[in-house]
Image (cartoon, rainbow, N blue to C red; front, side, top):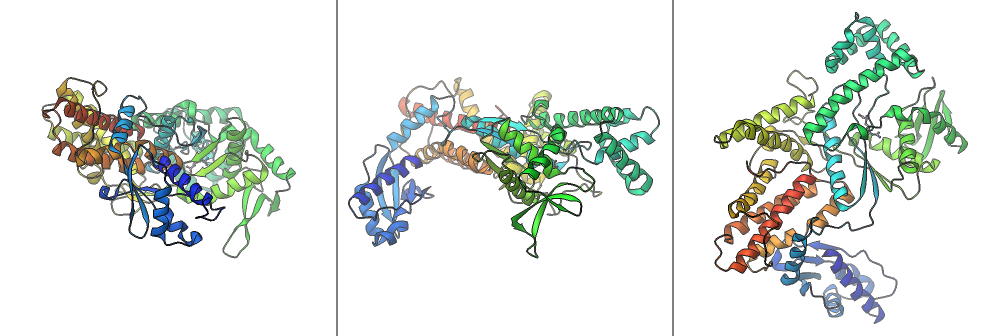
Length: 579
Ligand code: ARG
């Protein structure tokens, strides 16, 4: 709807330009916003205020001229001038109702991508292997997954890339530790976390051990068969732990999406060569660097991207350059989104700049770092266990499920054990995910079990429950949400407000896809659930006397139910029929 209003304004501007009211050559970005207060219409534009100066007119006078020049449109019932010169558009209820009827008849709820369909690579999760996943990997995994789902729903072709850290120096340490242990120690790898910690302790306390660890990395990188065999084993175990978590989190990631750092090993010498040929390499204290003028340190000296260490080893940035080239040339991506901690922002800015300068990526391929803030504990400090250790993701999910189980079984003592467990799983894991997704991506946030499991406020339990209310209405009726005949007709104020919100679903999803911000969808669903509640309280549905009114309201409820359900699924939550 906003797009069609923008289009109407454009036509009015063209007309006023032809008539000489507006100077030629203006090409303003036309802004159209949803209004908060529906008594002021549904959409507002500040275009008259923006153009008053170049037109040499008072904003309200220009607004009037624009209104006179607007072509008639069936979906707009009237346009008014408000305040200093806003144009307020009222949407026509019949046209709105017809749009919702069309959405109800469509499996995709009439959602379309606003721009061209693209092939999008999503770099997500990407933990460092040889350790278990900890809470720091949660955000990348679930935000990346949600944005991926939304883009897929909009029609994009999404390629997920789990760029795991499988080639670091940590492996030397693990190999050295394994070597020290008596035969049979390989079986201890099942508890990788424990194994890693023990190895790290040896590394920190013994210089000889550390030296041996470094030797073993060199051997591994030189292709020593035994080192490679053990390295493969570490990775297999580590990845199987990750997969367990992905499944538990209901995240769409599989072993086929893993393309770790080691996959680019063979490319790295070629990356250095290509940079050299382009004249981009500078040697600095034996290391190979690319200096970029646009990145300077506090003393105004250019910052280097180091691509090869003095000893010949390659770095994180080198691998990222190879990965960008692969995504551009082999995967043929139009767009690559990196869901990685905000603290790596400079790394990505610089790596993107080097890749462009070196011609590793096509000019028309978009590279976007979708950074995110830190998840803190309830005290606002970095999230830690009681004894100060890092929190394992699996323990966090266990606790969430236990808490949800206690909550749900108290509310519904009559449910049988199996169903309670299933509900607790959806609510517990859903609460952890939703609490994260509903915050602005770039802000830090406090992890708090009590708040995320509350049935009030913008939480998973509240939304899952809102969906069950709609589901139970249809259960009572004995019909599915897509089995209601008739037509939507909008009369009551609460029907109008609910309908206007329902019509925004596609626009919200496009926003999530463009900006990589799932919180926009969370806020939308929360508002939608609230508007449904007031509609449900004020407009009798099953008890409506007039069958046409009853059908219309049932259809509104059905579209609300399907929108909530689709929205929750796009966030990676599991909608429940009852709870
Ligand atoms: N393994 C890295 C880390 O844990 C994240 C990798 C992100 N992706 C990338 N292409 N650099 O910090």
